[in-house]
Image (cartoon, rainbow over all chains, first blue to last red; front, side, top):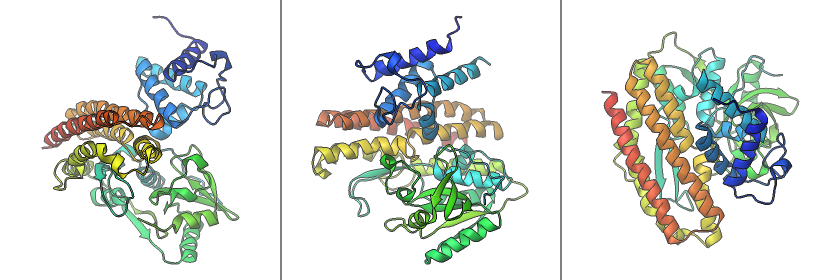
Length: 95
Length: 335
């Protein structure tokens, strides 16, 4: 089993978002990992429909479930928060 | 001042979250899914033509206030409740309770909460939050939709507590007044599940429960008749996503929370069948989320032709089928 590093996971999340939302005019490097993905502070300008697309894409790819809407909002706040959630969920399923 | 030992927690839904926080503060350790399940929070209703709604709409939870009432009935906890005609008296009561170190839940119109970002503001008269402190003219609020307690000027709180319109709060507030020394969880869980199954399967009205989901599926293709134009229709179709996902009103979120309740209940009353049903409900919840996303997509793209509404109708109809099977099995599991 290979272990994915944190930076690899974050790149993978960026690519997943770009693919899910068909974003072609932004490169992964331009997406700040800490800044919010919503509200215009980051290179991406996303809305609530995009948020739902991202939730479902993350659920499918990483076999995790984000059931609580309010929790979902905080999980998909930034690339870092998505990565933290996935890492924590994967650790839970291993233990 | 701030009620120091009050633990702020985020929750999936404002009413069950508020009840849970208040009960926890009163020393009764209970989870939000247990409160939701025992109080039969899961539901569905479709309203095609009603005076109170300008456009067809639906609900995915039981009547506001019912979770508190059912919690009292099934677990024996007691809440003190108050409504007011006079705004000053309503604030005085709130301040008096704060002075005694008692956090209380207020019913408010979501629109007047200054801490809610402008793009999320909508008039919903049945939002619940807990008042946990006051500093000068600002109240400190524990709102389960937000990660930290937030401040709210008293004028805004008054506006929220005395908003007009359908289901106006009338200054309603409540707080726990008593926790029984022993709670018969087996009986509470059984009654909660049986009532949820009754509500979803057996209410003899065509717009409630599974019948309501079926009516929603059938009638959604008629929505263009009610819309002024494409913009209006798009707005209403996108509201399906908002009602299912964004505002704690349920759909996928409530199905997931009820599934968590069944998982906890399976262990508490030693019924492994509930655990299997919990897994099934998770999958049903995913289906609701697919509907939510599809509605949001076609609404956003103004892609609202009859064929798209037909697909949406079929997706909703699919939920009616699986939920009918699910609640029938759940009902049998409780015999």
